Length: 345
Image (cartoon, rainbow, N blue to C red; front, side, top):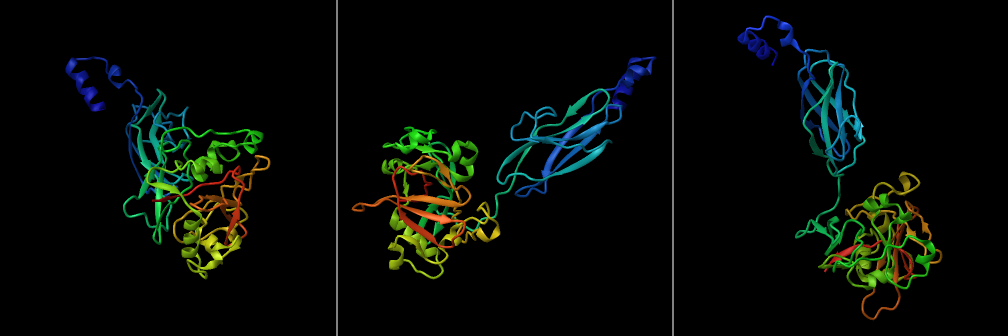
């Protein structure tokens, strides 16, 4: 660029060269990210022209949206001074997430930005086998779920998050504790009314929402008591499927709970984590108490509704704890707020 300007000046017969050495902002190119993992990536850039002025600052900005600058970003780096190529390693990223980034360079004239590019971090390692005809399933709200084949069953590998039935009608979201404990109709909520819990832990539903028969996406249904028994028998190391022990109430089996729990987020350290042998991904989403509407036991307990089948009278839940390796089956009050897993029809 500099040589081109000099040539133009000579061609125009300029006497004063000073007009051909005017300082400008730098020219910078954002290059593709490399070394992308679940939680890290390397950002790359090149400064092709310093604008005939020393580079005072250079680096990157990044965020979850494309409109990123030094004054609006999720993070930024300071890569020192100088021309040429440079890189920066960012860490602490979230798995399976799209990040936008761009390079910047500043000289005495001002700051220039490169093109906005993006990359997607890798998904966390997973032990599961996707269902052969549907690796993912999408609910009416647009939430996308991974599926997992466990024995002859096809399960969602995540807790349900929808706030609508599959006919596009809304489920009431109840925030107030007193209102929740007095419910006689369907309702849902996010633990602690904190929307940040929804992505990882899903929604909590009372049993009136389960009874609608419309909670799961078309072609899927809320897992029944018998389907939970089948899963438990398949997962357990000592008690087989169809064993009478699975019909018992209370804590049953040996290690089905441990083998279904995730390998992280369970409270109280590594001894309470699961092994997630099958990719089921049971998380400790806590529950909402039927007696007072209070939210309880997040990161300690995972509780899931079991839908009644024809002729059944009791409403059951499944209970996995941070301090137990097995899994419990208890009758439950329909006003309680529990998680939901869907099974393919």
